[in-house]
Structure formats: structure tokens, C-alpha cells
Length: 204
Ligand SMILES: Cc1cc2nc3c(=O)[nH]c(=O)nc-3n(C[C@H](O)[C@H](O)[C@H](O)COP(=O)(O)O)c2cc1C
View 1 (cartoon, rainbow, N blue to C red):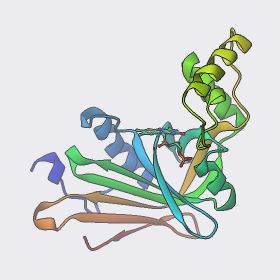
View 2: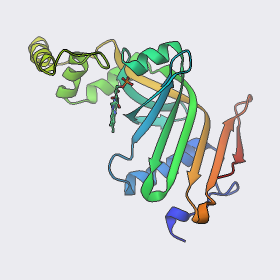
View 3: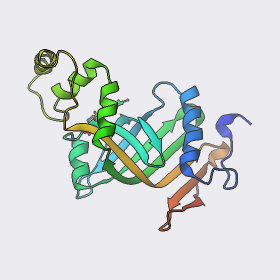
View 4: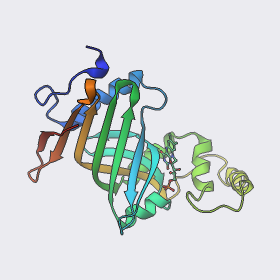
């Protein structure tokens, strides 16, 4: 059977959705192009008006799914008021989709500092220069700011206090595997009160 029609069975799937995600992610990194780590992030206003954008996954594990951004951006402002979000991965070559819902919390300052320090200097300066999601009078203003900041920080660029990581703490993770005749597999993991994961099959 070709891998992209490999069945997803309640008994063969990992007990832990993070382990299952790890298997799929590793496969996606090996075969999907471009940007298998790109993921759609949904947030919403307090009133429930949704918004979506792509971000890059920078880590995952038992402590959640991590991405980095500007805390003052639209997503950052929405998360301040409504800390719930969803992530959606789509790996077309493998006919796979993974959807993850949960609460989103800020990463620690230490984590944000550590990651910021690994970024290229240009990206570090851009994090200072760009007031993400605000209206700009024109593009030149960014170039001017970048030049000023390059002078201000000739060596190391500190992390802006409003830039850093978020961590989505999963409460539900659904794995979707395309199968023949549209009888796709959908396996949902839901976190129960006792912290254990319940595994259910959903109709495609
Ligand atoms: C493939 C891709 C990856 C992206 N990765 C990030 C990211 O990791 N962090 C980020 O802040 N914006 C990223 N962006 C830009 C966002 O999609 C978005 O334009 C920006 O974060 C502002 O979103 P907001 O106004 O909803 O806050 C990415 C865009 C694309 C197309």
C-alpha cells in the first residue's frame, strides 16, 4: 500500500498524540516541500471573531507546540483577550492533516531569549524595526528604522520585550489520513480530566 494511503488504526496509532505527531512530522520533514513546518494558526477576538495566518513551528513536545511572533501583533492582541487557538498542518504529498486545539500561553523569557539569539542579525533587527500588524505610511519607513537600529546595536541585538514565543497546550489533536473512495481516517485524541488521552474515530 502506498504510504500516503497507509491506514490509521485505533490500535496501531501511538497512545500519546505527541508521539504520533512526532512520527508524522518526521515524515513530513523528509518528503514535504516547501516548509513542512509552516502551520496555520487561528485565534479569535474575545467576541469570537476568528482570524488566521501562517507561522513556523519551532518546537513541540509534552509541553506544547511553540511558535514565535510579536506580542503586539493582531494575533498577540487577540491572544491577550482570548487565549484559545488552533493550529492546522496540511501535508498534501502525504494526504495528511493535523489539527490541534488548546490554550496558548507565552513561552518563558528565557526560551524567547534563547531562540532570538539564534536568529540572523537581519531578522533580529527587523523584529525591532517592524511594528507588526500596524499600518505603515509606506515601505521606506522600515528601511530607515532598520538603518537606525543597525547603528544603535552595532554588535549584539537584544530581544525586543514585545517579541517572543507562544506555546499551544493541546487539549485535542486530530489526525486525518486521506484514503481511497473518500473513506478517510480521522482519529481524535481528547485530553480527559485526569490528563489521559481518549482516542476516538470520527466519520470522514
Ligand atoms: C510560511 C509563512 C510563515 C510565517 N511564519 C511566521 C512566524 O513564525 N511568525 C510570525 O510572526 N509571522 C509569520 N508569518 C507571517 C504571518 O503569517 C502574519 O502575516 C504575521 O504574523 C502577522 O499576523 P497577525 O496580523 O495576524 O498578527 C509567516 C508567513 C508565512 C506565509
